[in-house]
Length: 461
Image 1 (cartoon, rainbow, N blue to C red):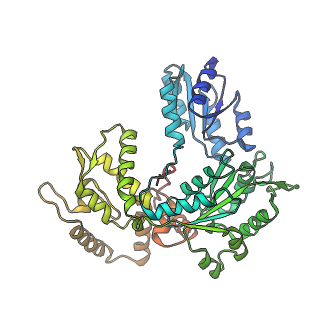
Image 2: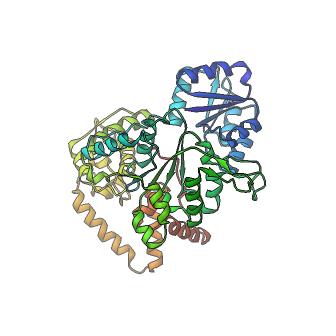
Image 3: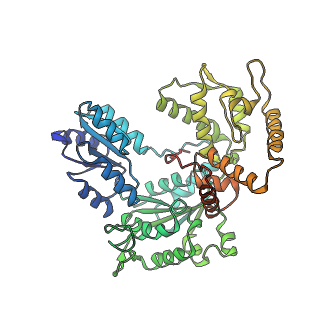
């Protein structure tokens, strides 16, 4: 983990740094916000920023947001300074840490924010074979394409390959091509010079330069605009990039991994993806099976998520009952591991007895637990009968509505289910991320509330 500390912290900086270093973090320190921002702009990225509350926390958070530098901020101060702590949180800081530093508290915050375990939890032979192939090709310099449905764990496998590669001691940098608007993705990838466009307040190093010497993951590359695809092809061929507004090319040395939840060969045939770029990237392909095709992974993942969310929420760790496990094993899991993770998070929060029972398992398409299983205080229907009842209810609520209204409700309900995750929702709906964005923009302009994305979901698999 990379930690950037901003501010003098009145002598406690050495103690905080030492604790973080002892916990395996790489620590960088600067005394001013401007110097900290310049370090982040120049490619000295961080997984977490700690800032003295005596500095302008709001200014730092706003600058990071305006320049699209996505890194959580933790405020620190001497003792329990409640007014300063409240002000820092309202300014956008994720947490407040009192000083002198407590070793266990700092360790807990580092672990909670960074979540750097990236452990791949599996027990199914299908997943074991994918990882075997990944480990076999990892030491090479070949580009790797990882395919699979949304939520199958493509980024975790990419990190696994990086850890097994010759570049494991260098940076792993990830950029989600679907999450960044088209007009900003070029700058995000290749960087820009000061004044290159409105809002370019300083030179910014892009992801290619940031990953120099290490591994760059282009997540959901199928969503990249064709114009950028042409520029990416040149970068791969020439091993150099041009910053937006720059005049001199910059040499880069990276190992490239790309992921997609679409059939790229089909996208090539449709004209949505360049065939020359496809062949450049497709030196080696790893296809991750969906969760429904690796049933032996479900139980170990359920146990893993129960422990994870019990610890995170400070509740007793309960075992899953045989009946609840049977429900989980027979579900189709359209959202794959990410959907299972969210389901188990809800189950941990809803359970109160010694075991997690079926009435705590809230599956896709159900508004409440009782709707999902037809339960009441005295009766409990089977999942099958509840699903039938839900289908009849859905049909009755559609009568009298326009097609556009039904489509809008379907899109917004799916987005709510995905906790605002646009990529996941688009995959479930079977539409492109661009189409989804256009629909949401139309709804928003019409005054319809649109769910906002939740915090990044780093599911383990």
